[in-house]
Length: 580
Image (cartoon, rainbow, N blue to C red):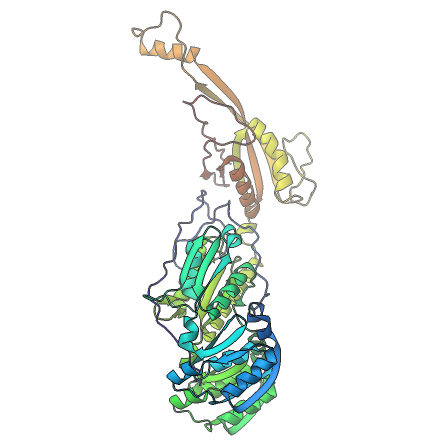
């Protein structure tokens, strides 16, 4: 029987909702928004204009990367109804480490040291033998100290706390912060965040200090590694053997079982599929399903997962990968077997607002809550989603993300909003216009700007005649500004009329005349967005209009190509917007 200790975790992590807005009032992008809230408009400073879907690798972070080397040794052993103390003694010889069985602690839970166990490994890492003993009905756990493996009760194993330091400076620099990392650990790891038994977690500069027992430390190292190196759906602290089992579940098989006892069905199907299928005997007894329950299923060239579903669903059973084996257990028990995955969603979420909307959709449609009222979902960065839930729920969320990516890919095959040609107008100083005529075609989509044959046209083009973009400069009315204190001629005084004083002020004040020009940019909306981002970086803000003359934004004070110092009382004149 497999027993999973599920503890109630109190509190609920609050997701940080950031208001996402762009300085432009124009709608950006053609991708459908996730959720029902107001759309998240990306900031041109942070927008990735060419988001690529994450790769499929790595698919898992294997525990063997973090366990002591002797426990990662591949073993092929089989112990059938052998005493536990004998099995552990033989196991210690195989791995070259002493293994101590805490017989006093076992006596407290009425477990004899020579209790018979039935366990085997087929070219699998040695630690799996210890984990399979821990997952049995005996209620045992293990930890390693000073090169000695100690097998004891679950309670004592989990009380063997140790504090370790984890460097997180690279994660902080990549966009995570202490609050988001803490929320992720609370929500998506096997820790109990209840009164009086919280793990020790603190941050000091670029180091995270964490105190808990060994299995969670191993999981923590795997989780941090997954944040650094992940694919679109990466299982955390998951043996590669489980990944192979999931691949096997998608392979077609042909079966014919007529009134076949459940135990024989599992043995024969496992032999046919070349996998190890185990039955959780005690849990099946608890729900009244005998091992000789007849199975009737005949299917031709169907996935192994489909065969198992058709055969087991009527009995309220299911099969899930667990510790390198395919475990047949109750549906209720499978819901308590939790797995953590790290999902790369940088192609779906461009900022924190969109990330929060995606989390909202997942919470609305799937039960990702676990251990009481804890959230099984977190986003340490907008481009990373961490989930902890059952195998069934995780598989449904994975298919949802894949389907959503496919929908986006299909919509990209047709002309989209990003591919539409539009014209924008930028009024700048004449010197800035000259500089931008050269800079924009060199930095933004080189080779997509077409040449105009008339050499007298005030236009700068690049080399490609087949390009779609044009960039023209048109003279604009100069900017005339008075600044500084007026100089009153002699004889002017307070008794003069207001009209006379105004005329004298205008005649004697200092005037700044700045030549102006208007850039007319015609290109795709995607390219216009890149230009907008470039100008935002140069000036700190940007202005422009669409074909309908709508002002996108009014540029304030800036530094960049051209700047004339003004008196403290003066500010930069508003930029004129030319109607098409």
